Amino acid sequence: MAVKVIGAGLAGCEAAWQLANAGIEVELYEMKPKKFTPAHHYDGMAELVCSNSLKASRVDSACGLLKEEMRLLGSLIVPCAVETQVEAGGALAVDRTKFSDLVTEKIKSHPLINVISEEVCAVPEGNVIIATGPLTSGALAESISEKCGSYLSFFDAAAPIVTYDSLDKDVVFFASRYDKGDADYINCPMNREEYELFYNELINAESAPLKEFDRESFKVYEGCMPIEVLAKRGEDTMRFGPLKPVGLTDKRTGKRPYAVVQLRKENREGTMYNLVGFQTNLKFGEQKRVFSLIPGLKDAEFVRYGVMHRNSFINSPLLLKPTFEMRECPGIFFAGQITGVEGYVESAASGIIAGINMANKLQGKTEFIMPPETMTGALAAYISDIYNKDNFQPMGSNMGILPELPERIKDKKKKYQMYADRALEKLGELI
Image (tube, rainbow, N blue to C red):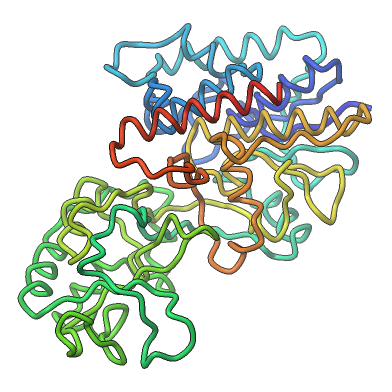
């Protein structure tokens, strides 16, 4: 019986390609061109709806390393991108129409892939890979929510994440309010002058434009107020909200700070921390400029910027294994942004892993789990780590999610090259 793959975006195409190349028949369902989401306009598969860039090509960059791993795993998307690329400096950017056409041609010409142009309104029985993206249609989203125990979010409101190593340890300090419990939070203390500078830059910073299909959701999403919107409600609003300094003492002065920005551990290893309460719709460059004014974050390395947009994703740490198969529903796999991986290339990579593991499952082979030292493996580990279940937010590729090197290296370029060398060595051993 054929495996059903729902959605012919980047993840669905990669999953179908892996299955078909393993000798397994695939039914690839795609509701276009009969029906489009608000973001899609082109009939072809693997449509790039925002940027036409697949990010950096250098292997010593996070996304460059991810693409190289995908190439070694037999990716469809990466060689199609290379064949249709346009000049973009050090990035791999494509002619999006030619790229989509090429992917569509290869998928449709594969003898084991049957493309079915119709909308799927419920999770099918049998072996299925759900790769319907961040704008999953209503009926199917409801069916997925029922299958997942209502662990489906419809809005992505994420705070920025910085690396622990990049924080100024002479300024920040670990403490809990009133010294109760473990000192799990990193605190960035502000005096009045520092706070007022930060406040004025924040309320005058430039926001990113919202897409039309995000605006309605954004208006009603009061439960996760953007920090810049909160700030505009009054100069002291943040000081009585996420920046309240009560119960904390600045170790340098022995006094309570005027305001405090708190950072919370993002991963089990403590290599990444998020800015608590700092979900934001500011442009990425503005986030870097304004948030670097926070004491202790002057030289902070941002591995993810804050975002606010519609994005359907499941609580993968509760639901998925690192193979992208559901823990409690064998035979149902997810792939793409609905799993909580963020970005074009990341979505495609998850499709590869889901496709390989579905094939292995049907052929009686062992599960294919990428080493955590690889970028693909680190992403799979992040979205399936039960530690992240309570505050799960989508994550893109970045060096901060990789296990630390055995030795500390200050030179960032050298460190990233060593990350890449280690990852490719581990993948080579696995292959």
